[in-house]
Image 1 (cartoon, rainbow, N blue to C red):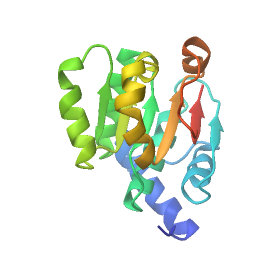
Image 2 (tube, one colour; image 1 turned 90 degrees about the vertical axis):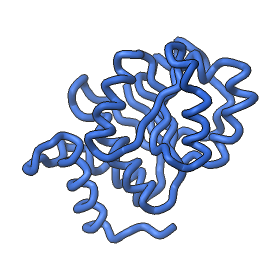
Image 3 (cartoon, helix red, strand yellow; image 1 turned 180 degrees about the vertical axis):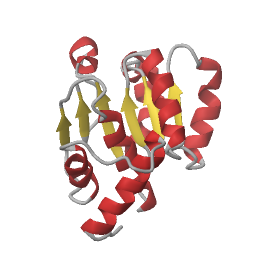
Length: 176
């Protein structure tokens, strides 16, 4: 995997952002592109702490798109609220990001979700903290995810403080 030139990355990131928000004139807030650049160009960790509505989700959706284009595995997004998950999936779809969830309300879909992951048809897997912390999930599904994960995002820091740590070996982005 080789990264594109920084200006090409910025152009691709801006185009993805515009798809995400549905506005041809959209541009990054201060700090958004820098976080994306750290994740995509530098393959570094990023801690993004901003107010609600600033566009933290745009950072990891755009970074996911760019990383997937370079052959990276799916992003695992730990998201604490079911309503937030639904909003994030809808926003991801607007940007052309294929997002699915595994949580307590969709157990009937888990087999299909895992099959889609196996076929590399998922860009972002949203997982609730309690599912991530579930022993069966940690033993049966998490090892395969960890082997191919492109990025791990913790959306809302209280996912860690409320649910404790899990056996995931790397953290690439965190949102609060």
